Image (cartoon, rainbow over all chains, first blue to last red; front, side, top):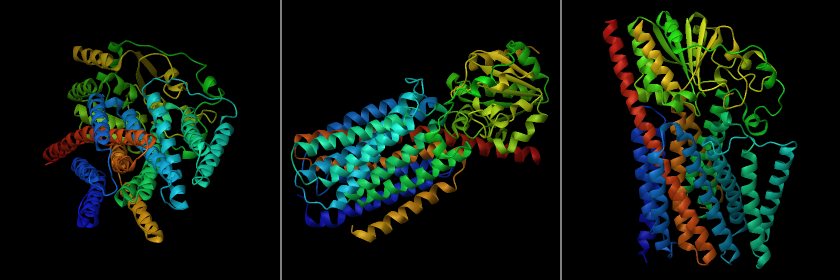
Length: 470
Length: 107
């Protein structure tokens, strides 16, 4: 047993410092200059909080279990997070976020069981624990589905008629069971345990069903939303356990995550409700009709090289395909030899190109592309009409003119890069299929568009070789 | 913590969270999402306390799961964020280099 002054002062003070450092760390992360310092700072705060928890006055035992769980899970997470390529970062965030949500739900389960077992606690505490359980469980199962989708384990967006009603019903059932768990918490016996099992199962199933119909292009927004939900669940359980540091950190992430989700949804010009409840391409109207006319014109890399080498202005539009093929280094090499020939080259980044906002910036920065060559959509969109060549590398939905012109298109209204206004458009694409959102692209069949079919890295290499011979 | 005092604390924390994000450039959205994902890894602390209080086997099993998941959140969240921000450091220097180059050519 710790001496009383330790419990009264040292432990709470350590948690206080930990919370302060965590929040300062998050603040530092919101500026590019201090971002790296921020994560290290936050890491120190976290280490302090975890170490102090071993001597928390209410921890009575199970130390060995604790250490085993931390060691095994920590090593697994360390290895997986180190190994994963940069392009797969989004789904890893989803996975680790899901684990946090699951942890919050499990804490709630332990606390509810303890209250049921006779531990003295008020009704309010049970209600808050139950709310955290619901939110955490939904974030857990929802994030895992998001992970599976981005990892490519789950290709189809599972939809059926009346799905929203089924989800609504399921949600209502979850709420009712949760209410019954809390209301009957002090009655003992088998029924209380069964009810709790039903409550958690329903919440998990709801998270799965809510995420299944959402298309891959919307995943970043959804992951951000689940991140906010996990934060909220953590905050609620922090209240239940009376650990203010946990409560504050959870609430801060809940609020920051909500804001971030809003910003992302805004960048896609899709209200959050639309992302969650509408789903891409639910009907096959517009989508099928748009791609029906015209055919794609395929060219060889040599022809593409000629177009670019003799151009005055070239705008490069990278997308997820560039990330998959790891083509950013080759693209930068191509840019450099074009610039030596006097061609003006710019990069145009759509706010949601790739799988997350800023995804392309990270990859181009990795390859060494200086910032002044990279332009945001608003700044460069008017320049496309003066460009001789627009080179699209593995981008699809963010350059689909249907979003601008075709009111029947499922992505109508999403801001796009006006690539189709360039004199020539070269599209590097792996195959003839549709993009992640499953929508036909009118750009690919336009008269000024030439398709260069193949792996982005290989095609970039061939373009480089082609330009060098000229 | 009791009643309304808790509500005040929650309100201030929420305002702080909103303020943190509202002024952030789009480039940093992904690292920040990743960073905030790491911050809510503090759930591990709660999981440890919950497991530390667990008495029945059922409570121990669920508590173990809670700690296991929480630790994954902390470690995975940290490593992913750190790796991502490492690149930003490079792009940062790149930017400064480019600015310097631009200044030299203009002068």
